[in-house]
Length: 335
Ligand code: KG4
Ligand code: ZN
Image (tube, rainbow, N blue to C red; front, side, top):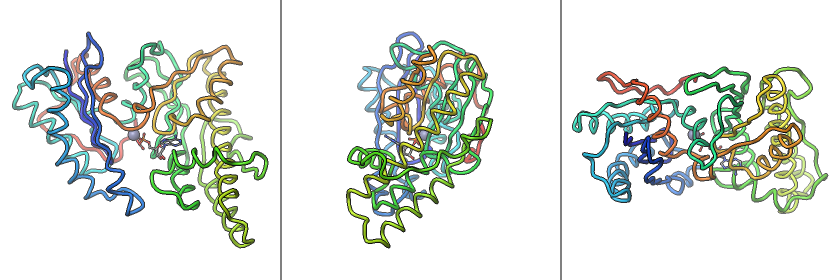
């Protein structure tokens, strides 16, 4: 079954072709980051308009790369949410129109399920069951995964997502959007021990997270350094490192707890923040000590992409699921 995947939930137009027998055939991504950079964040209307411009040309490019035509497509999966409603509607409309024209089934899938299953696209995918840490711009969740669609929420952020905290910290440090990779790059120059930031909610039992206090702590630290006339490049890097280390430590502590509680021997990390090298290294060290394994997608499949949607959609289409005639677009949608 050859599935076309369409991702348009935010600021990336992602298209991919996934073959249930042969695996990923082709994928393409257009990022709108440069377009939104002047505004310091994603402008929803501009995002929708750009998806309209890029979607069909990218579909044709991916089909050409795979040596296929539209007639070879057996099903279409698109991101139905959560995300920006206008952006979701663009992907859903194209998916339904193409599906209708080609006479093939169409299915809207959950964006976070896409992230969660992205490591399945790698040469050595994790076996079920596993614990997944989903860390993106909008979500921080720990999920027990027993199979496709068999998800048990173990814990989640009670306020900001980890990626959001990275983006806001970047802004405080005068870095561009999206902040995660830029904070991580700046932290490389930081001196250890110059600052120590809190590890929120780690002294309490449970698997929930909170990152808004850490954000305030960062703001207070930046403001104090500024007022003392100390906020030079070195101090900015020191703050970036202290912030990143605090987020990573917090995530590692909760992941360890989740593995111990569930008895699972496999940890999957997914979503934009799972591209973070310090987080990967720290989780590798932690799982190594527990005799467990950690799995993640290649960096380009950690952030938003069409391949994860094609994969997740393929599994569900194979199980017989499909949309009715209506386009599904759900801006807020718990998994
Ligand atoms: O999964 P994603 O592409 O989009 C959402 O579904 O939200 O995640 C984007 C988030 C942003 O907050 C971005 O700053 C963060 O992932 N991010 C990173 C890194 N790369 C992306 N955060 C920390 N370190 C990174 N290397
Ligand atoms: Zn995402």
